[in-house]
Image 1 (cartoon, rainbow, N blue to C red):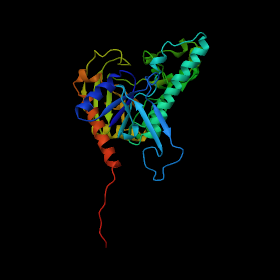
Image 2: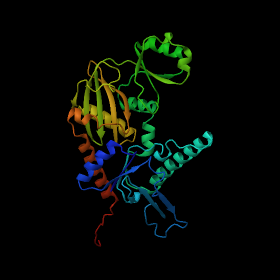
Image 3: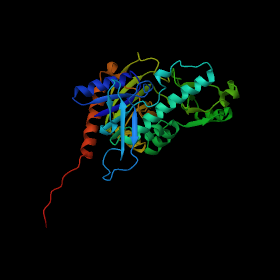
Image 4: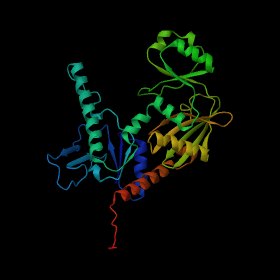
Length: 342
């Protein structure tokens, strides 16, 4: 059995669910934003550890509710696709009480306890393969940390400054030339696009001081790479545009791009150091053809590329999950070893 943790009506999870089930495998989606108001989540820890130590979780029982209303035991799954784990509860949307402050506290309590209970139960009861482990996913989601790891692994990365000081940005621009700015973490909602800063001195120092931002040297070129790494298999798209950020306009030329072997090894080495079995990576090719690391999203979007490039990414990813689950099941199966007396 394969479980996917995501949010309500996530197209990626639903598409992969259909593809995996078409292969005859059991696949269920657990919705992290639909815990409230739908009884089905439970976990019990026995007061005394069983003498034989049997059972997943050593003396505990667990159950989670799938998107289709079925209760399943996480300990019976071979693989857990940790796609999206944080979202506010749909049942709490718009909920308030007479006192706005009390209402906000209640909503926060429900969101926090649903999120914490679900994550804790899965951590305590699931014993299979994580795609990818929660701790590694969170750590790799730190763009500062992943830049450092990519450089240590051998990638060229842009010169980067994170600061709240306009003076430091001015000095940085004098050293590297053209500078771009983007968020360190970002916020829910519409994407904050990468922008150029032509003259830092033309902006008030207070605007820099509000919060840290990421300032980087501009990497020239019009060839952007979106690389999907599923285990040891990689599928990339070449996006041609003069824009800094290609995301707002997908009408530009986009086509399949074969991943060179040396780049594939470098990507796999970087993800291994981040402890990520999979990742969706953004690169930029310099005019000389060198791949520059921009960032990795541990659970990035890939479905949008399928109709554009014709690459069956959903099928590739379903194959990856099924194969990984089979290996995990095989590793968990005791092997009887026969032997005679010597």
